[in-house]
Image (cartoon, rainbow, N blue to C red; front, top):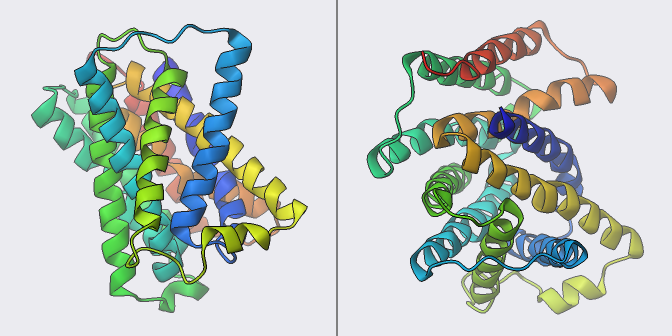
Length: 296
């Protein structure tokens, strides 16, 4: 239960932060945004570990390398690809393609880790995906947005996040490392690859990071810190908890329910919520309930 609750909480935080990132994305290039949120989250995690006076767990070289690789792929490449997909494709189709991540994660975990998911849990995964797809595939005003590059970036993001999740799960199995420590390692690796990519002309933005930061107001700085705190600091911490205590396929499915949390948020903000959106949420919740049934 701990893993499932952590995954749902992370999904809610990501839904809330997506609104914030929508604003930031208008001013900050995806790679730079990924780097900035990573730096803020790293500082927050180091501060938390310092307050707790936690002694860092000694990790064998292989699990440490695998955990770092999971951050490099899942956070450094996956999150950057996701931001690029949002900029090129739009939120609805990007989120739709992100639903490829849970079944892909479950398949990879089955192949690599030998994880077994019960038939009922598989039904829950499929039902949850059906609800998510039904909600985010609804025709909206921005449905005219079509960009093959965006589709490619979204698919790459889904693949990267699935691979990162499986690698993280593999590294965390039978390890004494805490979720907060593992989050720090993954974030450090993801931020490091972002730094390296920014040095490559093909990946660099039209303006340098230094110039971007110089244009920040205190309000922008506050928004970045808020977004990083919710989505990266707490979100990835909770993600690591879910991956440690739940099978990858189930954790990834629950982590993919962010589009569903957008529905009540949109209603509160005064947007129209259709019956299709409502029933899509009901279907997904029914699927989620099946995921809590173990041993069947």
